[in-house]
Amino acid sequence: MAMTSTGDKASNTLNQAMNPSDNQTVPFPDLARVNEMNGNMLSDAAKFNTKVGATVQQLGKEWFGFVGKRLHEDLELFHAIHACRSLPDLQHVYTLFWQDAFAQYGEQAKRMMRIAQGAAEDVAAAVEEERRDPPARVTMTDKAA
Image (cartoon, rainbow, N blue to C red):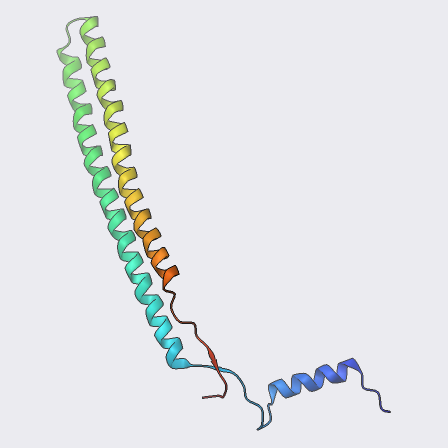
């Protein structure tokens, strides 16, 4: 009985894998299906990016509108301070300013959260839809194309 070493067996297996004989088939991906899957993934990514872009644009528009309004009120504060004739007048102007500022910042935070929450819900709905109806998987064919 001839004994073969483990190294010889591994070498033979590697040679067979690298140089398959005519009776062996090598699994090969269905390139048409791979192309279709790539197109589907790119299409889904483009839809997602469009939603994200629209959300970021809406958040930016909302934020810059708010900042513009707050800057206008900051300027108005200086005019109101200039018009004050006593310490109680000054305290009253500052009190009103800070009360309005905190209320406006709170409302703005709520608006921004509603926008972000709406976007998150849209993404969650898309993921759920994808989970219910997943795309077909790329399969390996029995023979090389």
